[in-house]
Length: 108
Figure 1: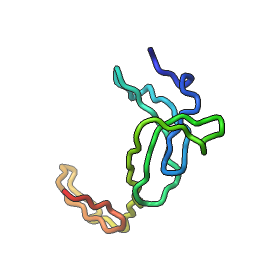
Figure 2: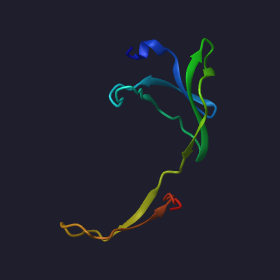
Figure 3: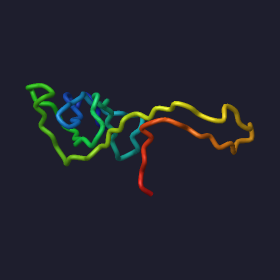
Figure 4: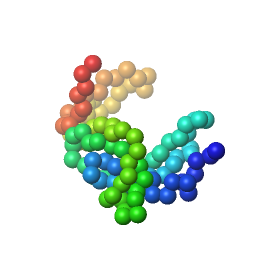
């Protein structure tokens, strides 16, 4: 059958201890799969445990969750102070240097 939002009233995403409403996203699903969309609440930088579930009759604070937790990393947004040079070739290939803070650093 086809999954619809009406089939899962109370669908919720749990970010740590904070929950937000969720809905099925039919625009990104491939045949045989389902996609769910929810917006994260404001969260301090770091890792947060994430789960998808159904809210109980007691509201979003009491969630009956199904499945395992997944870790999601939240990072401080990068800030750019300067960029140089101020212009480059229309053919591409110009190296641009950014000065700022909170650029993500990932091990290769």
